[in-house]
Length: 407
Image 1: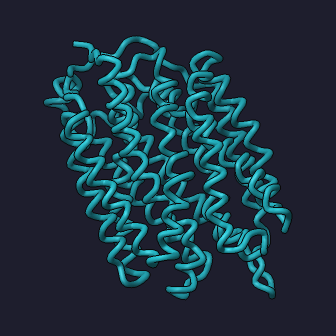
Image 2: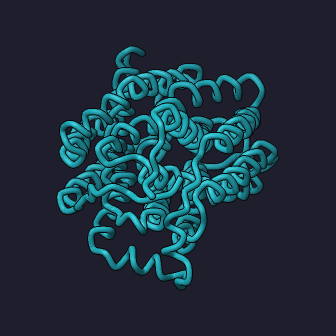
């Protein structure tokens, strides 16, 4: 039967999903502003740091690809809880890592479970929330990205400056425990899809998803959207500090201001996506994002308010693309294969982020004074990827029929 939740139950469900996304996103994001500290502590170069970022997403991509073969064979709540416990333990392992090699191993493990979690939260939204409210629901859950930026990252940086970089990961592990208790109480049982998957070969679901041309277009659109931003994002802290745009003490304000703007606008973007149309909103935000992407990579020392205004615009545009983009993706999937599709999407996004982060580390250079150069090449690559996502978005079809799941 169709899942019907009371408004109160639906609110707490979305709060729980947002909490899961918050801890996962924060765990991924916190490593990037810690770049200068980790670079000096472990004596690594920019490319090695880029690989530390990429390792997490490559692992997430591999696990997402593996999960796509079995995720629709299990009841959603139980699978999500198991994955979240393992994710919390691997985040704790990051906090305890004493060397670059062990930190790399812990990041790979955390990415393995975190990547599947991201797909599972979007799958639950697609299973439970009707199409006409899915943009708002996605916007609500996606505020976790803004919260991770406005609250999580600055708090983590202040905590790292006070108690060492390990303390930021200890704090995330503690939050995982709290959100895990919420998930036990708030997640409904979702198992109507299991009967359709029983008796099928492991690879059958993946074959069915990949055989659909609309699914393939949506997956490539998703990958292009993520690639556009992550040639730039991992290196913002390194660029601004090395080029004296911001001091180390001022770097948390980038995330504080950028996150505040996205937090205040995320639900508005979600509602606007439902009213204007998810495709049209996504395309407008893609084009708008080109401006702050370009300016960010050309920033020179300037008054702090002007610098923060630029980065606030950058983070707003990155998040404003994601909300209608993810609503399009959950609606592009055939309902009976949504779990498999979203797992594949997680794999595509993670590999795309990993490749973009690695490529960004290759493109940027250092001059004789230690300044970062050629950062503008990252924006050029991002522009090409944005135009590809724009072209593909015009060709993605969305399904608006009610979903069927049991609660």
